[in-house]
Image (cartoon, rainbow, N blue to C red; front, side):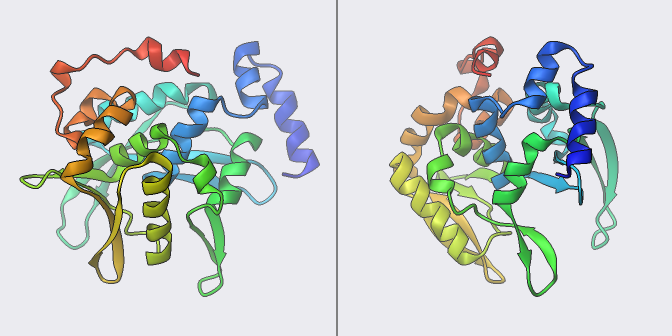
Length: 244
């Protein structure tokens, strides 16, 4: 971030409420940091300007609105605008889908995440999302919870958790499987899906471990991805927000 852009950002931020300014001028609180790592492994992305800061962008299907709004609340201190709804047409099926999106403001705090999650593709000369080299140190149960809420599902009948990591390379998916297996003690495999794309699978025998580890961090609307009924499990927003 250029000195000029940084100076403008600081001057603008210091005019805000002291609580908001504190969020924007410091590193992300630990819990939000973990949430963001999980988001960036799934549906979240970071956009970066040439000389300025970077911003988080979250775009989900409208059927995920309860979880989306949960994220919207968590990252509210970094938002300058409300969320938006967009209609997206699938050119293959001609069907129109409604999506929801929010973007934070451009801020230095998100530059770190851009730098570890994006790398220049020499073939396309464009930046693409990658698995960070230091992900082992960053990975936590909160990260896994948001990875599953974003890209996971529970296969009916087999109770296998599948996490659709198709956008990453085979080596990256294998690295992610190694991290989950060795950092969280949850046996995870990288499995070929289609067109040289790979996904993660967690078997039925590991399901109880996953539930014990991450249920507390799962939004009720996403508990079906662990085969759980939200009516049987409490969710205390205050407990979550107290971690921030």
